Length: 550
Image (cartoon, rainbow, N blue to C red; front, side):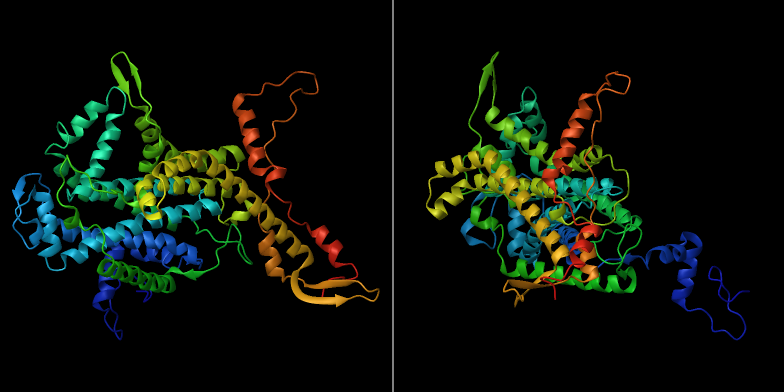
């Protein structure tokens, strides 16, 4: 028998018998084909860039969330039954509270390591959502969502939405005064839905707010349903990352058909393993020294009380800011009241986020580009897209300020009305200004790149020519640097073409074609890019008398 044959290999005379690990590997290969799978994927090349670690931060914080969540589940009791507290935290002795809040206090003060695990869990949730947002912004600004990665963008977007919802459900489980205020806020937004809002609220809370069912209903959603869906999406996301060639930044030797980097095994796995423990260690440090959500300081939830400066976690501040800065508009018609001051911002929150989810498909329709893209864009080379991303982040920041208008007012000694009006005006003005400023900065950076390619890098050396003129000596860029600065494409915008053909027949132009042409001009028109230097321009400049070049 061929000694190199793996499956079902038997020991031959004079050859040492296979070890236990090798026999297990042979057994698995005969049933799962692990050798072919390992050969195809373990040597897969991954490029090396710090921004690719953002996705790893999301993955590792999600793993920490699962591990700490399992531990907390063993001790938390999701019950709204009322009890009288007699425990380790003396200031609350004799206070009536739900069993959910009491078990949270027991985890914090009586379970060994319980408070540390609680705080690691909460910090990991914040880092997870923040990591997903920053990771998606990196993907957006570099155009990594283009074909064939549109589905992966949708997976990531869905993970972000589910992460926000999971954070809301977990934040509400302890039933303290702060989380109960957040649930009341959500219930008010649900009531604003025309016609069916009251029925939705009754269905969710099992009757009048707060009811006795909301905690027991949120618990399986938080610990089972949403994490299960998210785990499946994470696995699908990673499978697609492996299936597609990894994106990479422009540079020498990098094109749409080749990837420059290190193999998955052993280099990337060693780095990923070390990075996991680094992320885990940072979360443990945060959980150990950074107090977060001290429920004992808030006390149990009571519908007739509210905490001063009640704020949700930062990723929900966007939605609260929309509602806080919205004027209190109401319409009374046919005996019904439409609370537009709540319903409009409550609807805007998912609509704005949905626009982010469908953007890759909208851009693909505008460009009509059906090619695969594995080389990333430098944000400066896509000014309109970069401007849109910065405008969205600016809108988020304005709404976040509006959601914390009371905190900002008390800490900066400002008028809360002034802050509210600042957020109202900034909602419409700030994103537009951010878009214009970002676009101009990107165009300026494109002009600088063009000058560097044509004239070289400034050296700071001043030279006097024979006729008395002073010039600064420029050092020509290396070939790899010129390649990096000129590798990007500048596609021509979509044009409708002539409306009348050679025979004088007027061609029909649909509304979608006109819209596509206008959007294409906005994205790729002459006002949205600086033409990159051509080889002819470079040769004409460099073949001269060398003025200004060393």
